[in-house]
Image 1 (cartoon, helix red, strand yellow):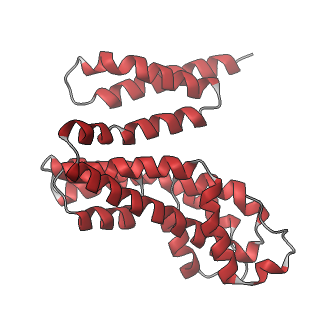
Image 2: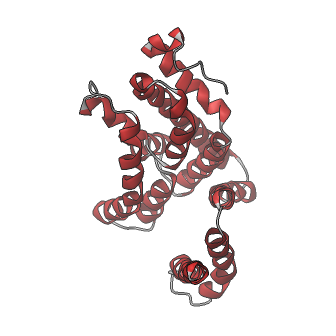
Length: 245
């Protein structure tokens, strides 16, 4: 996607900057990843016997795939609202550094805090990544409007996929409905693989995949946590060892 030059008069309009942000969703592969992820979340919501309205509101208000999965699975397993809220909050802490990193990219002397509330809500992994790609090509005074457009565009994808996934799970056979549930973990797996740049990233991913079946034999319910911590620790150790002279 080619944006207008920074000094182009096309940036004079806030509405047009918003529209450029909306159209930017067609220029990133992460839109497809987001779509597949939320199809799985919609199917998971149906499987957990939540209503379609509940699934839509969860997508709008939580707006973080992993946090929504935690919310759905904890409530479906019988956890209280307080317990689910704590679990979701802990998972959302990872987004705080992303918000801190993104907001200075669009602040100006005239920017008020209320202008950044929606930006902070929209900031998740997808928007965080795309901010670094798009914002250098957007005039600073139009960046808030651009991100509002990009965030609304990404959320429209998430909402559409949520409804599609929910309806597919409601109307397909049990086998196909179960297959749709696999879309979310597969989307996260491929997204992680795509973003693995260093040896430590690749090693952590591969070790996690290898160690998970072993950890599952423990029947502790902590198989993902155990395999992830062990794989990440080993990968970090290898990374530090390679850095030593």
